[in-house]
Image (cartoon, rainbow, N blue to C red; front, side, top):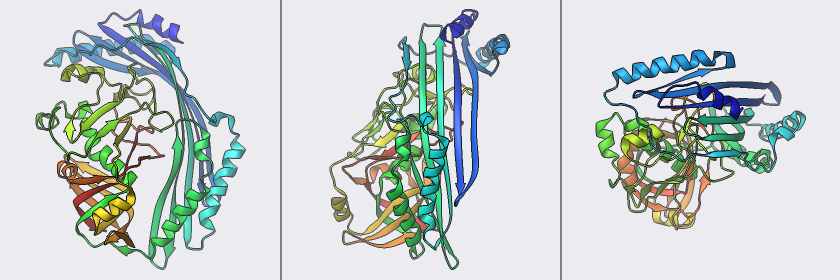
Length: 454
């Protein structure tokens, strides 16, 4: 396939061109309670060609090889229009020329696990919550997605990379009288099916939380000092901060670009934020992005000071900053856009017991539940929480919404825990869906969070 793609690019007269071909194999199983409701598998493939000519940069997607000439002409015409109407020509930052074939190390390849075994495992998991009379519904989905990507550019890069994703995600719903509650459950990763195995204790724990929520008290609105658990820290880092680290989201916003200038002090001295998609096994792991650039660990914030940004080759040239390998496409239907890989606040030195003592009185917030951002303001839900009094966990709380301002919140981080945990179910909907977008962090104390109940 590499030679085939190279032969196509040789016919393109442009300042730069690249082409990506990929196949995508998807298998999905769905359960509603103990009923298997869906078994699907699909295989799709296609191409994306990108062309830079006379200052214009454009892409065209196609699925049949015989349509390649039409796609080239379409991209050339679009690039000509873009070049004519842009106030400044598109320039691509220099990037390493790479020739590589890479398959991830899989502990247990999901393609080698039979459909019958996958179904039996899911049925076993579903049965655990349903043993409790107050559990009224369990929805569970298993998916494995295998992408094989071939990339060639006119500069000489030739890359094959395989991405293997396994994800288990579900919802456990409980009811007592007129009170209905639910919690989410997930497992998964990028290094094999073993990430889906041995989840019995996880299901038992989440079932217990769903039942306990029926007796929990709705939170009383107000301002609180709070501990955010690992995934609450992660979703704040991803949604409230991370998107502003993606250069394409701020490049045309002068005020935000000024606010997010490298060297600006945005957070407390304790805060170090990193995007590191090079960590094997985590959901966000990959080796090359979809324009053939090796991904690297990026220090986004050091001691509260902005130190880095996520880039494509185009935005790296525009900002005069290094490429980072974060230009990612959902699949063959799309040209890539800048995406986070694995973003997190780095761990500190405090145990959870020390965090509780430092908090004294407040709320312990656990597990994200929806949310949205508007500029530098954010609102997230928490699946549940606990009152904290005199450094000890108290009664369970529910119906929790958290809101605040990004910069105030970064400044109000007063303590950081000593362990890291990452989401087992990826996902980000910026423009395209990225199932491998991963986030996490340690548990942290944030002062003066606005808490509202439903």
